Length: 162
Image (tube, rainbow, N blue to C red; front, top):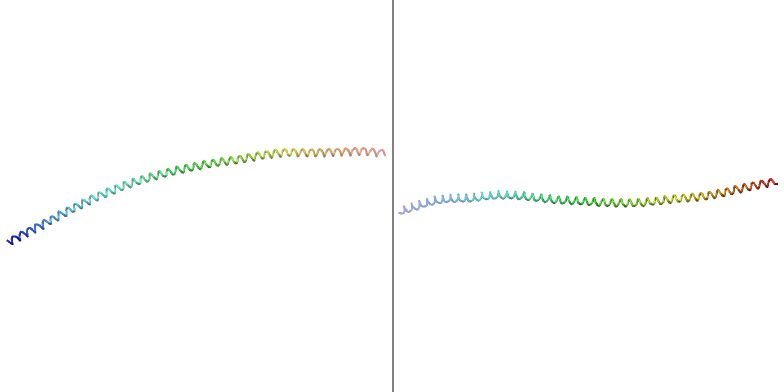
């Protein structure tokens, strides 16, 4: 009986060891499958996340480029408007400057004309004054010459009478 019980125990122990080995293999396979399945799922999820990140990065880059393009176009339009305004202001300043120069020229030209007329009038008056003075001098000289001639004539008559 003891032998039989020992043998039963031994068979049972061997069976248990085998069963635990098989069970251990099954558990390992299940663990391996679970880990493998988790790893596969993780790899798939990681690939999907990387693909999604790449797509999001491209979308963000497109949006960024579009915003930069819009900002550049706005800046360019503002620069063009500023250049146009500067050109308008420059044209206005040039027209004002030209008007000022033209006004100054007109005033100078009118003054020159006034001075020219005054010079002509003055020259005429001086010529008249000179002519009057010369005429008066000529008249005086003529009178003196005539007086001298009369005196000579009267003096010669007197001398002849003596």
